Length: 200
Image 1: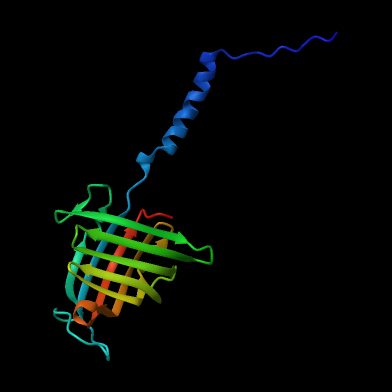
Image 2 (image 1 turned 60 degrees about the vertical axis):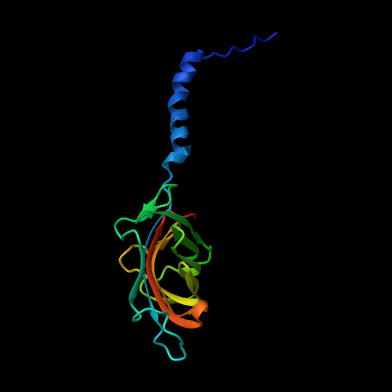
């Protein structure tokens, strides 16, 4: 009768010594504390539209009157449950998701500064720095007023490389015929923005 082959067993202490570094590495890579919160910089202007067919004056000066700013280009404000700007809580909800068709991305961006100021941007953008792209739906709001247009244009920054990638976008949006429904007016609204650490 053939002898059964015996297998050497590692002592439990030795096994733990081998596995412990691996367990620690996995725990570090899976920890949620390493995920950075979404953050944003927005600076915007608002004014009466200068295009033919526009109506009303939006109750502000020229087309480049300062509207609202959140954060700075070098210091975006984070959504971390306590991010504040000017003493007001900042809430950032955003996603920049590759469509799977060339270098294009579905973008859904929103930032609120307290209960007063904010902007939402939605649509599809291509990785084409410096080129004018159309078809974005945008709403600017500064309580109690809001200004919206469904076919705004966007030019992605040429300063970032790339200006758009999964989870991040940098550009300037222009809405020359934003509707101010409360006063039946047409306004010129523009914003430069950086959203980063967004959902992918």
